[in-house]
Length: 290
Length: 120
Image (cartoon, rainbow over all chains, first blue to last red; front, side, top):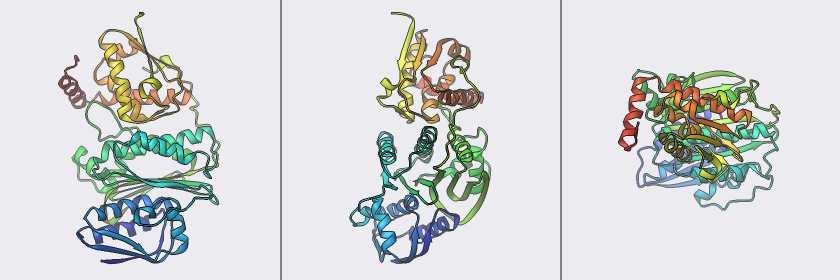
């Protein structure tokens, strides 16, 4: 099977729709050679390797053989630097300016390994020196997203992550994708309501809503993420099933896709020039906690 | 030996990254053993760099499904936390109290604890 990807893949609704369409076209293939031509592409946001890589991994599990061909030089350069193309027979090239956060696939039990990966990729590279408060919030947000994927997705195929610093925009993007049952199924089963995927994501992002049951409480991770990104004037995009939810410039909006994404992607974009301390204004004393 | 059990989170987890639910569970198990024995517990977060709600939900939030609010308030104290982390812990505790107000969730948590052979 030959497939061609065109134009650009960016962190936006249209590009997610394009990748979902591509995943749907290939979903029933087995024992096939899937040749993906990138000849007509001119841009690829490196953090989107998280979603693209998850889709390719699932195709490969068909089993199928996946080949990426006719990759334009500028795209090949960036996807070689972040290690993405190493999964498809290319050599990893040196990231001279250190602006990439490597593309990696993790097993759900790899949280320690994930921690080391984040530390390694944010320290002593071209990723800008962020204020101590911002760095801590960013790292904790990434872990909240990763934990959410482990706890809620029930994925058997791993968790895919990748990031990219865009120096001209002072923006750092980081994406986490899982191929688990997704927010939509979780919320639908939990609420027993006929919600759309778009409504399900909104539900998960609101108040104290949680699909968690059992002895360990939940329902805070995504809200903390939302609060942080709003203060930072960054962006969150969540894709699950046919739902797309975005927080940008402090405003939330949502849309639907024509076809479902069989998993969940959370992409965050932070403003790296933010110097806010992120300390709470109200003083909480240890004796007031419980 | 005094009545207070001192738990160093860094030591239990073995890292300054206290982010994973499974690591939070290890801290929880130590606290729960002490509470069942009627001990007071002092939890130190000295040298902990990163904390998540997932970790704190497992370490401390779930205690509200096993012990009364009164017992927890009378028995647990924390120290060596930044203002920001204290704020996070407060939200985790408030969320846990709210979570276990749902009788179905409380009952489910109780069943799971009993299945493990622990006294409730």
